[in-house]
Image (cartoon, rainbow, N blue to C red; front, side, top):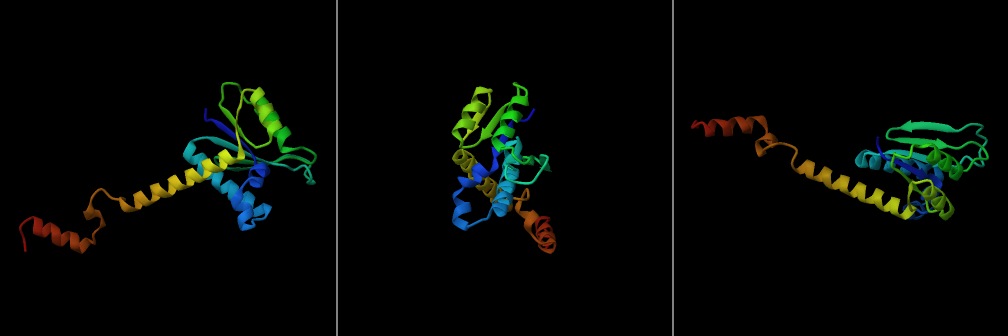
Length: 170
């Protein structure tokens, strides 16, 4: 079973220097966080639940959307992300590795008491940045070495000429 990472969305956005620096609104911040978590989940091989407060919304029920490997959740009216996260951690089998990403001290204490581990917002943002940088490095290496040998990169006509020279022809 894949490890589970549960992310308190607005808590992470509130600690995200790039969001403030670039003046992203909540919608843009949510989209960028979702994209970064999808990349991270694919790289790290974990399942992710991204939880946003619906506390002040008019939602009567919890809204969930799947963006594999991320499930994005908006809580219902009058329910905090913290209470949803606490319930999700409590319902997850003990044998599954669960990490909760939040900088809320009370929430961290609560999840630690249930056997989950915690990750601060800064730690998660650092992981996301490092994963993105590693992915870019890998892309650059693949771009430099996509084939098995140099001949794979030559035009067909030039390859034919070189093959003819190799066989002793002029």
